[in-house]
Image (cartoon, rainbow, N blue to C red; front, side):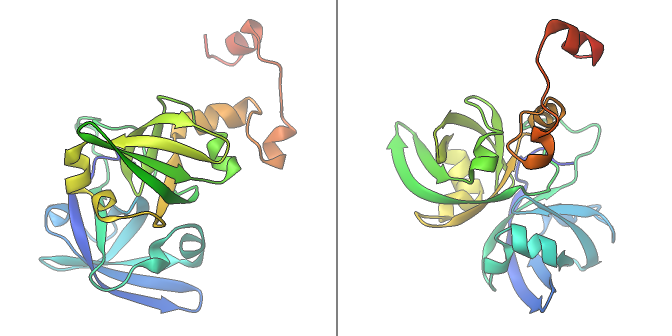
Length: 219
């Protein structure tokens, strides 16, 4: 589990793509402190396992499923990435619960200045938009952000200058792809109550009532 609070910007040293998998070697410093082989590090919001490490770099394997569902295959030598070590129980939860299991890829379609901040308009698949709500949480390339509004084919978030400076979003422009992970708790609640748009959960739709909530431990 992660918090969506990026610890540092890492740099891609190599990306080796194989027919059905890949391997990333990345430079980092802070995230390597106390990290052991087998530990998890979120790379642009994707939970990956450290298989080798040195003083300033580490290597992770990337499965075919991960390459298909994220934008990691677009990385190249010199690319910057958001890095975060797995959550410890004593860590302050400054963001929200992030699993590192990306739901899909969105695209930045507009960036608008708003006071000191920047508002990002990001397109996303309907299946992901149905799991979002205004003032809810979203992880974008592993960054915990608050949703402003949700429209039919996009949503908006606002970035303060610190977030723009300390994460990859400050380096991305219109047309860039981003990894998206919707709120973990919201997904489970929607799935349990049959509110998701996918076929499997739509079969499980139930009427929402006080007795239903009581029976299943919500109240």
